[in-house]
Length: 215
Image (cartoon, rainbow, N blue to C red; front, side, top):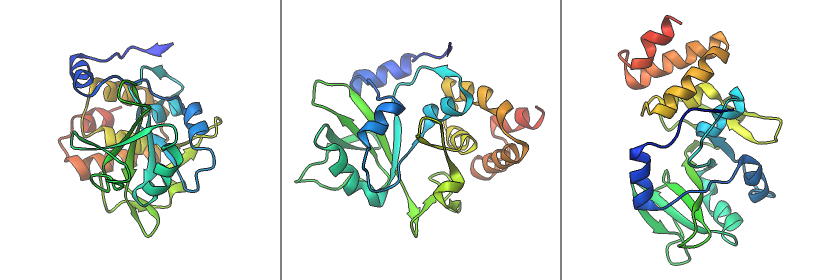
């Protein structure tokens, strides 16, 4: 059974501006990325669902590649989808005239054509000497295998404690729901890591910290 979270008025307002989404499933992402010559992984709510097994509504699919692998990603998907760069709410098509994204850390959105729904949100991820770097904490640099895991469906997902660290910046209803389902399943060392990361990034008064410390 899917968890009880549905888009709210803020989500509806976003869709009225940017248009509808009909996201690919992780299984469809595997098909899309078959033969891709570089790493890719899934983050956000889909990564939490893969870890917890608790289903909920997902308004998009966050499929991540490294910023330096964007040209290969564009080549991978451009025969099926138009490629757009979204940076701070500004959208620009990526084509032969404008082959680079608006910013190395922008999001890349995919859709078949102007009247079709968006299907993939690809946040470009920074790297240091080919290693993964956190967007929330630039000092956190690690091998990709240390911060991701591969599920039975063959999809590589970001570790749940790191997903929650990212989600701690916004504290939306869906982020609270993901926290509730994930925290009880985390081993003690990952709980400690998350609490330390929340304090370091957002401050000791972050609303999750006191509650999690007492749970």
